[in-house]
Length: 199
Image 1 (tube, rainbow, N blue to C red):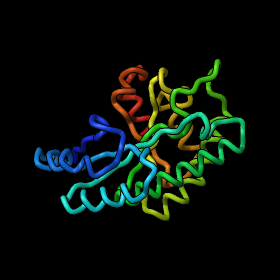
Image 2: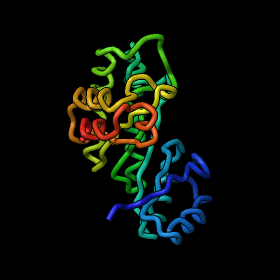
Image 3: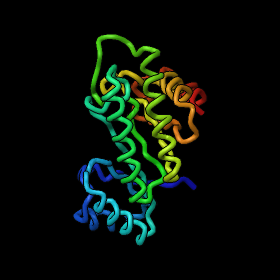
């Protein structure tokens, strides 16, 4: 049977004990898991939340984004290195949550655009960052579920064809693809074909 989780971004992007009553309610409704945005800086907040959700019998997943100063497809090697460090930072927090999955569009900076289509070197740059981060994720038992977003949120991966290109560039067992029905409904001409393309 499929499991169903709820992303607490509906309430807040923070991870704190203030969410305990919300999570208690989600458990009571019958959800199987809870998803958290990895933005809170303090590791202790994730450790506390990880224990709370585990005691309730809820699974956890995590989601993250990157900004322009930590962009895996920047021309700057320094900024790409910051992207790698931020993803490792996120792995540590997801591990504290007992999460086995980090999803999201962290192949590139969210809502940062250039006045041209994505180029091959950008897929290679993102693939290299994700491959190195994938090694770190593997040591924590975490898989990246990379996400294609609509054209208003990123330009590197809008379609499953582009996402497939990224996954091949990363070439790592812990760097996989996620099919987001919301974004696919905007960008894909044929949903069936796009699912088959990424399957």
